[in-house]
Amino acid sequence: MNELAILTTETDLYTHDISKMGDFFSLYIKNMKSQLELETIVDNINISPATISIIAEVLNLGALSKMGTQYVPNFDSLPIEIKEGIKTGKYILGESKQVTGELRPVLIDANTKVRVKDLTLKEVKIGPNNMDITRNLLTQMQLKQISDKLDCLYDMMNFQIRRDRDRDLLEPFFKARDYIRDAQVTNNEEDRNKYLDYAMDDLKKVAQAGYHELITCSKMLADKVRNPIFRQHKHIREYMIYMCEDIYMINKSVGLQMQIYDYLNKTEEARATLKEYTSSMVDLSQKPVGIHGESAIGLLQDNFLYRKDNKDMWFNFIKNIEELDKCSTGIGENSKTYLICAEG
Image 1 (cartoon, rainbow, N blue to C red):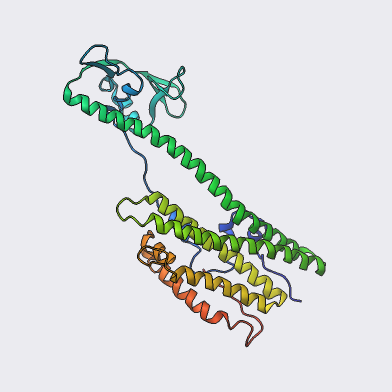
Image 2: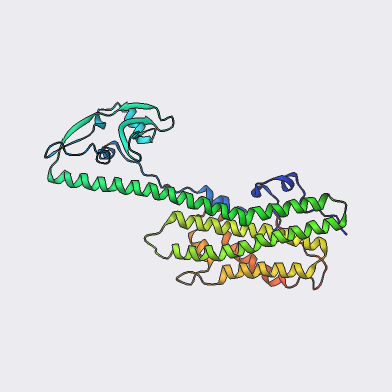
């Protein structure tokens, strides 16, 4: 039997950063995840000192002491450097030490929480016009507080999703990698075959989880892009990242499976595994999931953030999948071994 040499570098043998591992089976995909993550979407809202003054209402400092009069923090009297610190987020209003969830009229350093400046109050005459403005601004501040709480809840849910994806995709992949490493170092052929069987079980789990995740994320992406006006770009971007990660993990898994089958001379199993892969990718590029009949790859293609060096990426992906699908049935018919690889 030939020498088992699937993991050929120190990184392949020991890393837990999958992006650093070898390109076992690549079809123009390896840079998709990083290209998406490098693009930034700004969700922060900067509030000017004038707008912040309305927070007096939230602090109960804005209660009317007498009809037509209101007291609000006097941001105009603050030194210029303090105002700049408020604009940049360096200084923020301190949290109340007596009432949980409320604020107090004092500026603190956002990082150290050290008191920087006490705020003074000024008397403001309230007429019919600016009363409406005050109420509108107060409503916006209250909605902002609700939004912040929802963002916190969303972050917790997103963390759980990440944990679940790591459990389904990364954990079994690295277990399989460790079994392959054990198979490469052992001198006992029976143990080697046992380790490879264990590795194959985990690699199949990764591939199957990836296939199912792709179907789910495709449907979710189609739903998120359905409305062309009120699009949630943050969520669209996340589902696109998930899909690229799924394709990336499927490629890694199928690539290792193909190499193990090649080592074991299991040609029929290799052909079935490759056929499952190409069929899934063809469905991804041809089966309608969007409201206008777009495929999952079509939705990725329409919403991807392109640069000059990747403008043809999805076109090339579809082209190569179609070519691979045509030749996948030929494995084992005219020769003993086929190697599937890509340089780069």
